[in-house]
Image (cartoon, rainbow, N blue to C red; front, side):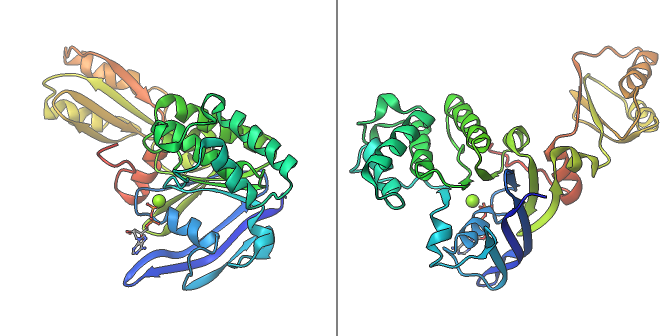
Length: 316
Ligand code: ADP
Ligand code: MG
């Protein structure tokens, strides 16, 4: 078994009356890309801030690299790279000066630092923007600068808190590929997001959070096996009667249906021929239909089945 990089044990964090973390535990091993997935307000950033000893907590303990974490544990902190949710760079410094500044907090040798800064610039693809000031950068490029500042000192543990919120697709891909590359080069990654697709794409293990609690944990396949949904069949179809919906609901393996007047959604659990059986019913009643598609479960279905609500915000 690989070494534990982060061990959080029964963490409780209150903000006044609000319990932001409710007996929250994690054990992250060396070499993982660990995803913390949860809706806004579920406690992801609070977890990161406690983990870094930036925030005092009420109960529990935290170990990083096998040692107790504390505000003055500089030997641990220099092995951690943090990319915060809110971009934190200096407006009066250029791209390369910013990276040099943050890298300089950990690496004092000038020559070594010059090389690290150069590597970081290339890594995030900011070669053409070295002399730019932050305010001249697009949202996506600014995010990449934020990442370069966090990783230039080549930390063993890299924590990224929602690094792709409000970035263009190109920067988003650049960021996700970069994270996987850093992991291949040996870094352990903690990645928080409320975008389930990203977490599915890059994370080797995932903890799903809701209201300060861990509601499920595992690989994406393990998580999907925890729920009864195995397939969701969607059919674009008009004027479906209640009797037909009842007949479909009574088919083997169908556990739920939804109809909005334009699209019939059929939730199935197990079974191999769900689609055919559903279409047989429609054909028997001479119903014409449009597009038909079947979806495998997503992490959103996992979240939905456990909490009874969707993971996504409406505005996303
Ligand atoms: P996430 O990062 O998953 O969006 P947060 O950790 O930021 O969630 O927040 C968890 C909960 O704690 C939310 O209900 C949030 O409103 C609350 N919260 C976060 N920071 C503070 C704070 N400084 N004071 C009071 N409440 C806070
Ligand atoms: Mg957050």
